[in-house]
Amino acid sequence: MKNILHFLAIGVLVSACTSSQRAPSSVTVSDVMDEVITRLYREVPPEAYDTLSEKFALNFVHPDEKEVLATRYQYFTVNVPVIVSLMRHRSQKVIPFWIEEAGFRKTELVVRNESYDYEVWQKSFPAGRVSLGINGFDKHRPVYFVSVAPQNPDDDLLITDYYPSQYEIMSLEAGAFTYHDWSDLLLVDVPPELRGQKMFTTVRGRAREAHVVGGFRRTPYPSSSNPDQILLTWSESPQTTIDIQWRTDTTVPSGAVRFWKKGTSDTATVKAEVYELQDRMLVNDRYVHRFTARLRNLNPGTVYEYTVGSPDDGAWSEVGTFKTEPEQHNSFSFVWFGDTHTFPDSGRLALLTRRHEDAAFYTIAGDIVSTGLYRDDWDRFFEHSRGIFASKPLMPVPGNHDRQDGLGARMYYDLFSLPKNGPEGVDPESTYAFNYGDVLFLMIDATSDWDAHTPWIEAQLKNSRAKWKIANFHFPPYNYEDPYPDLQEKWVPLFDRYHVDLVIGGHIHYYMRSRPMRGGKVVLSEKEGTVYQISISIPAHHENMTDEPYAVVQYPDGYYYQHVTVEGDALKSVTYRVDGSKADEFVLRKGNVNDE
Image (cartoon, rainbow, N blue to C red; front, side, top):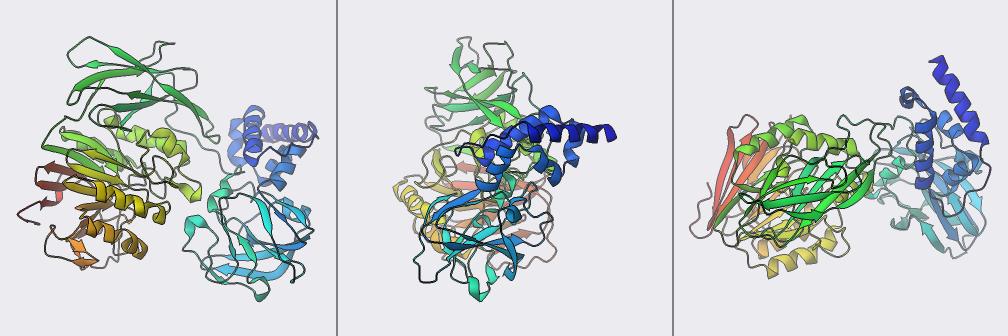
């Protein structure tokens, strides 16, 4: 250990002295941290990564990098002299290095929300640019937030050119929220002298922007030159297209798919797009290549064989198969999971579903992984499912864990090639619709703006001629623990008006199937209402579950998957436990009603 510390001390000294040039204004915190981590991998032995401290990180960065970290995390322009108040969570162990250096002074004021206490630091600024620094080198999720007031109460304060610009400026007062990824966490105590100030909202995910201390991870399943994590999806018609994705290390420069109708030797080749995916905190596999090949003009109802690989190095996968949707058919089935969270147990369920050879595709109702910005979580997900998505498409929706801490679902979009027919104002591929057979599937990202979805949902339902309508989104409107009255108000009337047959979801980590419901009340038959179903695909247990008056079945523990068959005027759903036994079963009918 002494040798390591001596090495680190030398590295710190060299790093601190090699550059005094001021950073250009276009350099971002992300740019700096990319360079810092790259240099750290080069200069510091791996056995020291897990013991790095805030002090080491501060000394390791160059002076010009330190300036960026101290000034470009948040900034804005004011037209009059102001007082800036910075609310810092009291439990953060190390005060961010730049706060006192910049001239902020701690006051006796305290701001409180329903979970945290914040001490208030203040500084006066002249009219012009106000620049603030990082939340620290740790990953302290209750990140600081700031408010601004004119020094002269009679001045009309105008704030312009602020970064990050995607987060709203609100009024600092009790009842307001600070974190967009936890908007239910409200301020409860604001000192009178701060009330009504202009407050910059934020997200807790900003704690990750300069994360070094305790931030390094290792994937148990690193990439290689051999293609793996082969995945099928649809971004266009299931009858005539398929999208194939896979991974290699960065030594493989290009990729392609070779495919042919089963039983023939007439082979076609489609080149793949390649994308370099970075997770800079993955010590053993920072960069990988992700490939996407889009096969078009396929024949409906046809079994194809295929292999993926690189024309440049000769490494190809084993032969796989997929089947396009028939042009006309009266029946099909699919499998859906609740939250999978990368657990080996969800992988056990996935492998169990291989017995449903008739299934056309899979879907997951969000929370596919536990931390959507960690690629090692996705590596576990693919390893535990062991290739089942290489023969049948996976059509998922994101959950709150896939869109971690308000930073978006970037890695989700990098991994899945999905339809881009969702609502305006919502990230492409997070919400989409597709038809299979006589079913409209509404795949809704309930972790993004609900209001932006409402007109789109109505348009999809209103214009659909499908016999059956199924909506899939993560947050269940009806559940015993944390129901969503806003979703009940915004979306349920549309489900009622256009008769959505089945709404599936997860999030609450238990199993529940409702009786047919309309307007929040139980009705006599599925012909009059919608069935709501919640499932969970990892072990879960609820100690104090209360009875739901609308529930037919309610399980406080266990984990499950669902096999749904649609055949003409009947939709049959069977829920299975991990031992393969049936946990629930129901049939919905168009015509003669038979719910149970």
